[in-house]
Image 1 (cartoon, rainbow, N blue to C red):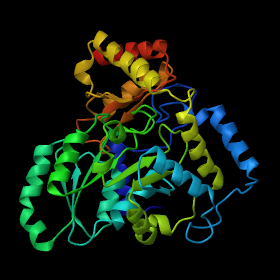
Image 2: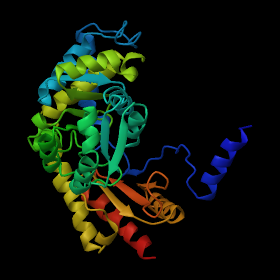
Image 3: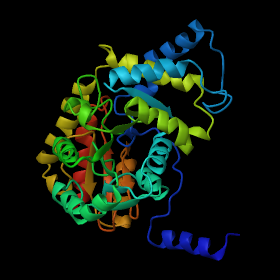
Length: 386
């Protein structure tokens, strides 16, 4: 029996059709996973990881401890050196997950008296990290440089009097909308006002850039960004995350980031899989960005236009395409119809998104065929019009 307060919260979720349950895995056509390039089931990466460990006689199932104790095996050195080189960064530090990286960074780096200005649509893990810090935080309107400028002006006296450090936080691709920030404009604004710019690249790495380097590199902004957070559970198809920045930032995180210090390190196999995913990303076989963005995303958007569905979709050039369907009951009903036709498309409900902005979140992949894309939008069109 749950405490009464907890039971009441569950009942409220049931009443507004937003109670979360763990889905049963079904053999459906994938328009829901973050596996944009299909790396999670790639045999070449799987075999290369196994051979890499065998060649080094590295037969360990677990890390045995945190990286500050017994878990810092030499595979980490090779991976972090590779990440720094690939992403044009001075240093990289690997975390167990994107959530760990974000709470580890934002709970440790902003100090008492500092200010954090963040896009109102940033990921929940960033919000949680900020809430754990001693800094004060304020949100600005989504992708609005003007509103960010208003925040800076409003707090200019505080900044001057207390010598506060200001961190500006955004995502290069937003997970619930699929749209992107004006990174260049925001980066130049931060440079002009001496603000520390932090970008979460979770849904851009592997997708944008000649080899999937992400939007910060594609737009040649690496020198204007204080820290980048990237995850390996999306386009890289494996698990873990990393923070890119200066060598001093890495040293600071090793000493003060609690989600890094007080957790068992990733298993050697996980670290080796990330490394092999990057090697594969650089190979001719792994260069799938054009196939994803032109063939899948481009075709999807053309089909949306053909069926006159553009008014329902949030503008996006990424692999995330969101169709707004107001109301938890209605969006769940259409998701169910898509499932009955063999497609896995997830309904995103309030309170995950604001009430009235519930949506179907289409995640596109390099392996989605033109026939699958046309069929899923045919079914969507039919049910939206009904």
